[in-house]
Amino acid sequence: MCEKRLEDRVAIVTGGARGIGQGICFRFADEGAKVAVFDVTPDEAKEVAGEIKKSGGAALALKVDVTKAAEIEKAVKEVISKFGKVDILVNNAGITRPSKVADMTDEVWDSVVEVNLKGVFLCCRAVIPHMKAQKYGKIVSIASILAQRGGPYYAHYGATKAGVVSFTQSLAIELGRHNINVNAVGPGIIDTPMAAGDVASELQQSLIKRIPLRRIGTPRDIADAALFLASDEAAYITGQCLYVCGGWSAAAGLG
Image (cartoon, rainbow, N blue to C red):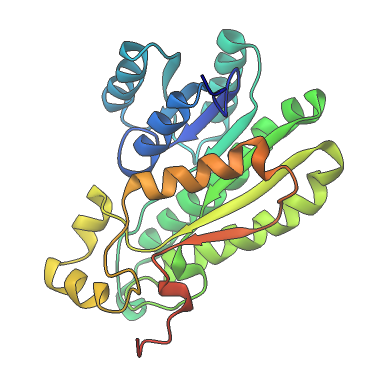
């Protein structure tokens, strides 16, 4: 029997209750990780943790708002108390709230920046001392294809995701000497509840025609990429963003 790629690793996944985060939680658990599901919806987080336990894995569900430093730090301590360490952090929690820039309120801008960018900073800050102490760690942040391509109604979202990529590069340089890898995954259009709420079906069909693989992605597609970057197979990869978008990031719009 093949050894599981995350055997005995402890992983925190933010926004782990649904969509991409849920897919990552299940995939990591399948590969042997003990998974801490952080989410603002505690009941849904408990359901994910419960499914992992039913399958023979180890999981912990915690209510965490990634914009609140105190909640994050408390939750990280709970994870260490239960599992003894933190090896992997996946910064997945994010929101969109589409809006034209001219119509965008301060509240909408601030809320997207707080969750998508500040949340990544706060979660990284909370786990870094523990990873440094054990001289090992994997940080994977979920960015977006919009980090490199503009999109109407998503200026704030794209700006935060570009920020995540830049933050990833800088943090990788800081932490490399401590044997901590810091990378990002840039999803394209993924079949999640958030995407379904943001993108009308007719627009999705139009966008699919621009994707070389001619389909939208699945949470499993992103989970597999996150798994690779969180595993020791990616030991010599750091400061990178892996775009998982069916080739959309390479397309010029004429294919």
